[in-house]
Length: 285
Image (cartoon, rainbow, N blue to C red; front, side, top):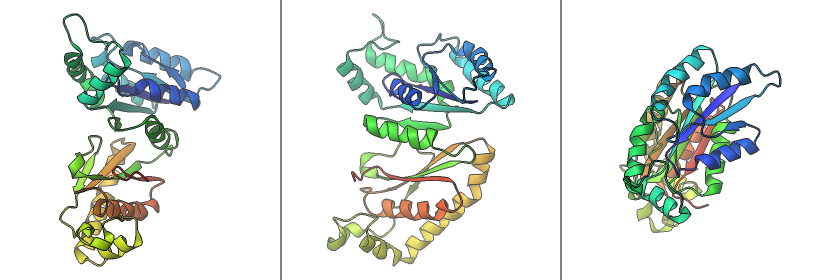
């Protein structure tokens, strides 16, 4: 049996993820009291029907005294050799405010004395023990429903049963650094194809841009240094029970240099790692 704990702030997409996992064959339980998790796992693990995948949502709707128990419960389950993954969904506070305003739903922590904005901030502190456990963090601020489902499909459902899932994500600093990145590389020091008029409308996947960047020795050194760093330290991440690693690469606009670097890194590591993905945040195609 494989256990996936879904958590995160209200409005970040937990219900969407749980429904999607249920549609894909997971046995799902929403809003489980954390203290009941060991008994549930024991019951399902002993089911002769052989439930393969269990997904449980644990969030701020829990009793506040139960939430600090989650890290210890996860350690206990892992000591019993039960595979446990913790997925934490979040979005920036402005986006969460907008989502609650549009849906007109009540936040689980809001009361007559606690307003929506204050409840959203309070929820962050309440869920911090679970957020620190997460092997996968997903920022849904700018994600559509389809993009969130694709991320769950690629990073949870289709991921290799063993080994580490590696995601290279390009981004533009002008739109902010991805909050779910584990490692961030800044490649704005590299020659910029944007200043070549013939290359401006292209992106880092196009042959002309690739040829331009590959002609610079400093670009080759940057790629080589990143590859060597990751080759050295990825085994240590795996030894530390990490299932996912997101490597974000940023340039000014997220169109040329960062895209090229991510594509290059993706090709390099696809030969040795079963689950390697490349995503470009600023590209719409």
